[in-house]
Image (cartoon, rainbow over all chains, first blue to last red; front, side):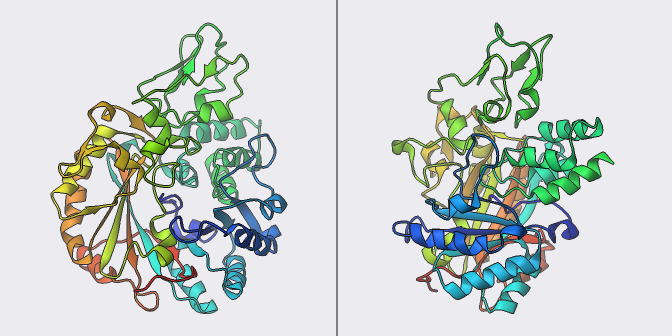
Length: 208
Length: 242
């Protein structure tokens, strides 16, 4: 799944949008990796106050938060998704993951140049890159501006453009706040990769 | 998905939740365009339908293909399971350090048709497949799309699914780096022939250090990739070499 690859936005916007993805390989280390993934969640919990969003693809749809960081440290996870807004925080987290040498495939989705610098600073040699070459075809049909940026924060395209516009309207009418609206939109993204911080800023831009 | 016209009170709660704008206000009720609906289930999860008028009907083949591709919580049945069992794609670059799926001298081509925010029919997916088939391209065997292919050599999909619509569908292939210059114009040509959009991604193994073997070609063709990318850090063990 190309998932986090095609997030839209300017370089300045993307400076506050890094997604860390860890995944067991379906063909190599799926079995027996349960405890390792829990230990990675333990490391991630050291950055509890710096996390914008997180998840493992098994959300709690019963209401409240989609994910509980304490519960994730005891859960079965094949994948780990974590969103940071601060380059230095993801760097610190990555450094710890590297030092513990968990052996789980690790991907950073974010500004290419900054990610390369982070890797150089902590002694990582990147292995593979997945580039985005943009949107092609009948692009007149694509949502525009901030709506597109918010929409692409969910890799499965579940954050409906109609709901983004509806939320903006509710904000303009004073019925909700940018923060609450961003939180509501994030509930449509099962994987926990939706950057609520960026969404809040974009909603503010849409409604001033 | 269906909206029972007897019990719908027209509150509009569901209208905004639709990922493809298939739900609209009718005269005094919400109505759903079943041709556009991709069965993602978003409306049912998000909208708080006060009367239960919004319901998931029983989906059978071929319509259920919409749900397999659009609702990432819907498992594929065993007999059609060529990939992870859920969703539209595969691990791609995410586990390449361990799987070795993309090696030096190879480029992964990922065409996510319908994304962002437009959706697609399989008729348009087939147009792109047929454009690519003219090149010496190796389609990935283990993807969700594999279940729908009737004739791989001709790039034909099963007849009954062509008019089904999904949120997006990923065509995954692999070529030699030297063939990229030939393939990219074919992809652009296909883009002009479809009534939807696609997001294009390329995967390559990096050289020692962050240097990309695609940089010279990008410079030659005047291609500027997006500033953001997905980078596999090579922390998986045991690492696949070369």
